[in-house]
Length: 189
View 1 (cartoon, helix red, strand yellow):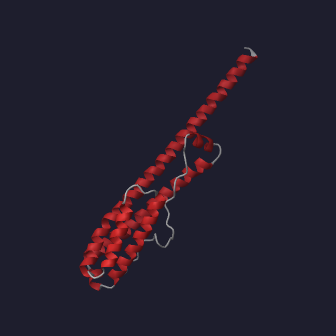
View 2 (spheres, rainbow, N blue to C red):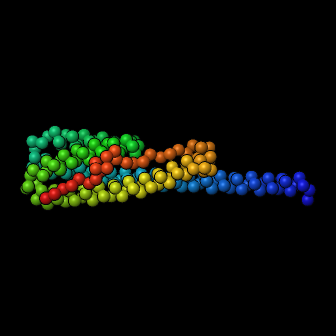
View 3 (cartoon, helix red, strand yellow):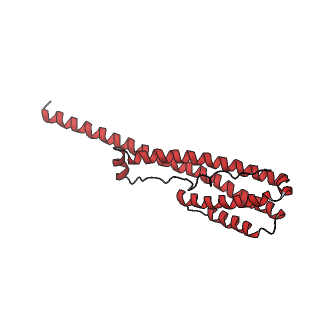
């Protein structure tokens, strides 16, 4: 074998190895992006469950505290904004923060009515809401862990070269502006 042939074989092997590495990096980025999207869908499902519970909770409280119209309107408007389609994680987090604050005010109204707090229907709805809040928190942690992994891969060398070539970008975290706001509302009976 001539020196030129050996050099061509070495170059061909190097090119094949670089291509295999690039394909591997690309596939890894696709996997991470899909994990982030799947995790967001899980969070979105839990948020929708929360949004579906709220009208029932409002109606239950409304039966006991009909004169608290401003609170009911605020919860309804916040729910409508949070349930809107097409929001990214950052926008969704802001909308959910507003909804959580409105729910806190609704539950504060409920505190003033002992017969409401004793109502089995209200108790079930409040427990379901607290359970949903826990599921949202778990989903948010899972989503953010996947976002962290994707973002680290997109920003780390040498995978950032492949990410840049194929348009992979950082994903948004789903986080509350104030950690106290994202906690499940405290319901005391």
